[in-house]
Length: 528
Image (cartoon, rainbow, N blue to C red; front, side):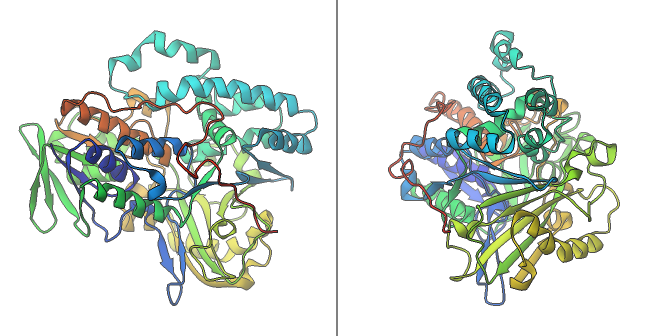
């Protein structure tokens, strides 16, 4: 079966490995010269001496990626080296305290009790409840196509009811811990769902649990190395790549996708077309609206949809390594607790005391900077481009202020060590990466944009067309993008007469590690 995949982001690469492993004739067309999409990375500095990731910075549940390789008959360790970090994230709070989160539950309880001596048992009860929630929720909601009748089966959904998914994430955590530091530390990932903890469903408490149970993993060489490794794996399976080949449109005849037309006019034909690009952008630009009219992908529906925030990114090349600090750092300012409408809807950029996230990868991985140097990046949530914003001023103000703010997470005197820098705004994401409105976390995960109400992987209106990525079910994030690729592969496999794909859905048992040689024994010790 001939398959065309539009886009070599993580979803397209996962799909390519899946389908080439099934024996499909796979061609991937990608507009950039290198793979990865938003994960392709950035090289900067006078001599290009600094490299940094531009997309995902955390891998959760590497067992899911491991299964994609194994299903195709490959060993992941032949293409990638993944390591579990010694601690997950250091979270700094508005009151000057901090919490180190751990996959080692003895260390995690000790950290909780250091911060709040009376909450150790409370945390353990919450953790065990979250473990049960994960067991039910992962296979039921994430690794399951949202357009099969089984998704609606009350008997399948009933076990989740005891976890009160209608409750907000903040209420769930606040009623458990009664301490805003823990409530916001465990709910901050809701920002990457396009929501605030007070508007996000409690079912998403599974996200922090994944890291507490299985750890946070890093790809050596950066996530840009993940893209290169996945491309090589797909090529070894026979997949062909057409790089620097932007697609002009998906060819649809009699309600069926039959191929794509490249910008230069060349037409490529196939039995199946899989689109891995920012969904709102790709739907509007690649598929004629006549095939989308009256659907969730019509221009009108996409205009009215709810989107996530964007991000200001400051990439810094430093002549110093902050080796005493962890790989991942978060600062939660008091502004993170705002619940006014402006804050809930990300209407304005906070230029005074915003929350922010820092990736300090050179404490783990020497790739990306000369010896004794480091390449870090800082993420500050901002509005997306919907609305009126002075992006030049926002960029100038944040570029000036962010280095000083880094002292709040222990990075002192950063400004003295800056050798090179680059900045991205919401306009960069929109214009250079084709992200609709620069909303880097795509469609928000509101109740009306979840599960069966989110755009589906298998197009219900155009045969042979599949959508893979953060805008479809099950949602945004590297892990869920890979699951959308698994869903697409499952559909195509059955079309090929091969039946469901092997070893899927896969819900890794609590406390388990990847089984590939080396991946379950690597432990990193941070230099002191």
